[in-house]
Amino acid sequence: MSGLEHRYEVRSRQERYRGRIFDVVTEEVTMPGGGTGVRDLVRHVGAVAVVALDDAGQVVLIRQYRHPVGRHLWELPAGLMDVSGEELPAAALRELAEEADLTAGRVDVLVDLHSSPGFTDEVVRVFLARDLADVPLDERHERHDEEADLQVVRIDLDEAVAMVLAGEVTNASAVAGLLAAARARDTGFTALRRADAPLPR
Image (cartoon, rainbow, N blue to C red):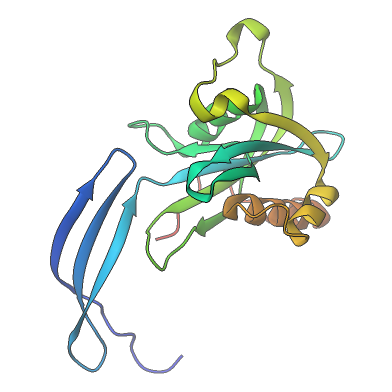
């Protein structure tokens, strides 16, 4: 890289919508070479997702209805970072228990992604969960709304990767997580980050 990067400064900000999960704002931003540009963006609370890998080399996939795309998608157990004060590994374990009825004895950071940085600041942290065990029947989460018809399956990791490459898995965190999990497995899990590693800034 040569020279200094332009510093994009926000000259003005107008809030268009404020919600529980995201806010929509319009910002006027300084551009290289002078002048400004107007950008609409979504400020998002962020999310976690979990590749749950069992001792047989299978991963947990969930099939869930997603209204914005109008169909069911194959996904990972995942959820919003919307509980005040909750650490990310705890959020991942909560979602794993609620959506897949599983606990994990080991959790590591697998990959981080900006889900769609052209319009949102959403960051998704994908964890790798191992040493899996079932949540006792009397302690399982009661699922509501779209979660009421969740399908939960276990599938060989290589078969899940094939589903990604065939276009059968299109959820961004699932694509990233499954490919990263296969790479991590193939390199002996040597490049994983600690569960409490800082998020990218």
